[in-house]
Structures are given as C-alpha cells and as structure tokens.
Amino acid sequence: MNCIAQPNDIVHKDFHHIFYFLLFLMHIVGGGIVGCMIARKIKLINPSIKVTILEQEIDLGLHASRKNSAVMHSGLYYKSDSFKARFCKDGNQKLTQYCIENQIPHVQRGKFIVPTSEAQYKNLLKLEQQAIQNGVEVKLMDYSDAVKIEPQLKRYDYKYLYSPSTKVADSNLLMEQLHKELKQLGVNILTRHQVVNTKQNYIEINANGSIIKQDFDYLINSAGSFATQIAHKFGLGLNYKQHSVQGRYVRGRLNKDSPFTLIYPVPNLDNLLYLGVHTTTATDGTMKVGPSKQFQQDTEIKQQNLKNSNDQNSITQNTQLNDLQLQKDLFQEVSKITTYFDNVEFSEFQKHFKLTEPGYRAQIFDSQKNQLVYDFTFLEGEKSFHLLNLVSPGWTSAISIADYVVDKYLKI
Figure 1 (cartoon, rainbow, N blue to C red):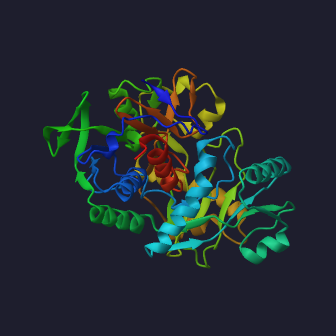
Figure 2 (figure 1 turned 180 degrees about the vertical axis):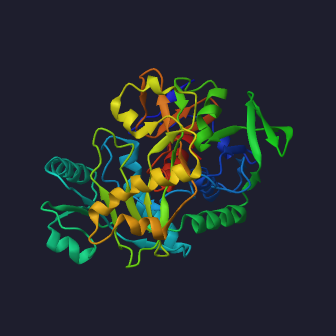
Figure 3 (figure 1 turned 45 degrees about the vertical axis):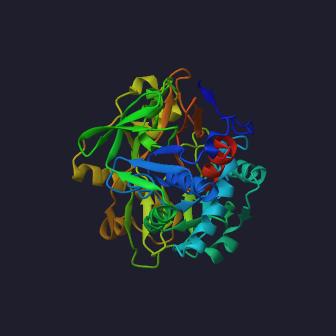
C-alpha cells in the first residue's frame, strides 16, 4: 500500500484497535523535533504503548532540529491548500505555549519583509493577500511607522510588510527539555542506533557496530534527510529521491545593537523553497545572517535533471571548496543584507561575524514529475507511516504535525 495523505484528509484507518493492546511496540525512526513530538503525543494519550526512538547520532535533534534559524514562522508564505499553511500558524501557537510552560527562552520579535523595487513591491502585495487567506496577521506600513518598530531599517519608497507573530526560540534548550520530558514519560531512547534493513515484523539495526534485530508492531519514519531511504525499504515513495542541501550562516554582533526584528527580502514567489538571505536575532541578542547559497549534497539526483530554472538557481552542485574560499563566497552572499540597514557596511560583517556549522534541509525530488517537492509529504504503509520533506516550516509545525499523525492516522 502506498497512500499519499492529502492536506484535507480526515479519514481514519482502522487498525483493528491494535493500539489499545497493552504491550504494543511502536518504533519511531529519527530523534528530531517531529519524531520526539510524535513520541510525546502518543505517551500522553496512551502511556501503556511501548514507544522507542531510534536515533543514529549520539544525541537527539543534532541536525535540522538544532542547526536551524530557530524561527517560529507565522505561516504567511504558504499556499492555503498545503500542509505547510495548515500546520504553521497552529504550530507557532502550540510551540510558543510549550516554551512558556517549560520556561524555554523565546522572543516575539516580529518580521519585516522589505521591497526594494516596484516588481518586488507587487509581489509583496501578493504575499499580503496570501497571508490574509491563511488567517495570518500582517500589516503594510510606511517607513515612518516601520522605523518606530525597527530603527535600523533603511528608507525605501514602498510599504513594508510586518508580521507581528514571528518569534525566535532557543532550539538547543528546546531539544534538551523535550529529551528530559520523553524520559519522564517512559519513552525508550536509543542513540547510535541506525536502521539498516526492514522486514515484515522486525527491523535490523546497526547498534554501535553490531547488527541487532528488533520486533515492531508499527513504525513511524521521521528520519529527516534519511527518511526517503527508510521509506524505500518499505517499498514506498520510490519516485522520491533525497536531495539534501546545505545552508550556512554567519553569526555575531554588530558594533551597534542588532536589529530587534527579523528582516527578510521579498522572495521569488515561483520558488518559495528558498526565502533569501535574511537576519535572525537570537534570544541571546546575537544575529545570524544567511543562509548562503545551498549546495547539493546528494549524488542521487544529477543537476541536469533539474530543468526548472528556479530550482537551478536555489540549488547547485556540491563543489569542493576550501574553508577560505567558502568563507569568501559566503560573506559575499550575506552582504546582500546590508541593503536593508542604515549605516551597516559589509566590512562590519567580515570583522564581527563568524561562520556557523552547516545545516541540512531534508528536501526531496519527485523523479516522475521531474521537480522538487514543495509540501510536507506523508506516506502510509500497512504497518508504517512516513514523514518526508519536513523542510521549513517543519520546526515551527512540529507539534501540529504530531497531532495530525497521531489523531488522524494512528487513532490511539
């Protein structure tokens, strides 16, 4: 069975009430924020289910769940009939509440999207309408009003789009709290456990170099950049190929105060997989600028297959760059952000900012349609459920995604 869930799908699958069995074995592959939130949801609803998280790294959430901008997006960009639109606004509110309840640092900073040309301004007005359709609060502001909120904005003759509900949080402390809570709930967390093969009723795992077998009654695949490989082992989503891409930021502090709000360019509306170089002022006041151009990290898809020019612009072939060349190219890329600030020179970034570790997006490519996949993708098997393409705003949407999977499909 290879059933692709749709955004408006509300059909429950009958699992013969097997989830009510006392010793039901639930395995979750991948210990990122989504997999952990699914485990949490299951145990809160039915503590008797034995939930095991299998994570191949030494700790939970070491990839995109920590190495991201830590922005709680408002949901203004996304097509109204998409999973992204459905989960982002709700996820923002639920993740905010989780931070409040668990005393995780978070700040409601808001976001400005700044147009610098007539063509960009026309796209900005389209973004405003999309936000309204999605039920997301936004405001068009003249410079005189915008600069009262963010004094460092550069003056342009166009209105600015302000999203007040955009927030930032401490992604590391969030994962540490979630890890602690899962242990308290009785979730079995196995790190350095990599799924290498699947059979009908058991999986084979590389556990610190030893191959072991574990039985399961149901498996949830939330393995991020490795989710496509796991789905293929179940014979699902064979048309999807992993297309992980790398993004890097610079991080530091300006001589003057960092801008309080997040500042974004107007994106290419035909390619919302990449929102452009932007600023994020973290909870500790440091500023991240990026991401850089993203480099293809997976040889499974050749560049010549990307016939869509917009895809080609956002993802290029991986090149072997030494650190100095990479740093030079990255700073050239992020220097674009000076377009939006008054009295901030490129030299300040070179002097005060340093490269962060790279982060990876779990992007997938549909070989049948010959294009990158825009939305979150869910595949349902006989005894498994697979979450693919959990790119941005996946971090923001994590709790809402968990609610959807457990309430609509697992029917606990």
